Image (tube, rainbow, N blue to C red; front, side):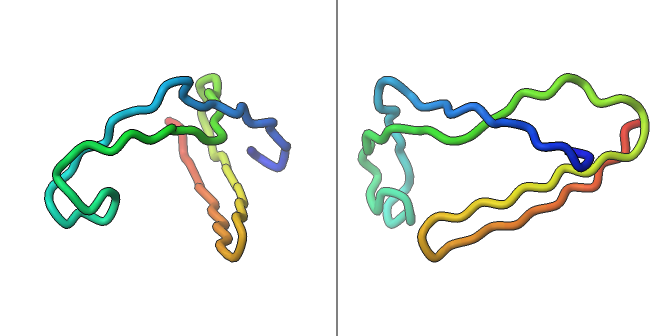
Length: 75
């Protein structure tokens, strides 16, 4: 953030969550619940001061890569 590296926290559920959807949905394919574990990399930031800020991150998993830049203005 703003050119500085922030270490992210690895957060995962200890118990599976039940995901339900409509028939033919792309996640489960059915209307019945599917039990999955949820997790990822997260960071809770303190409120940003007034001004311009840049949040940049890059992630890769196998052949998939994601590069994102957020330009924020806090008033």
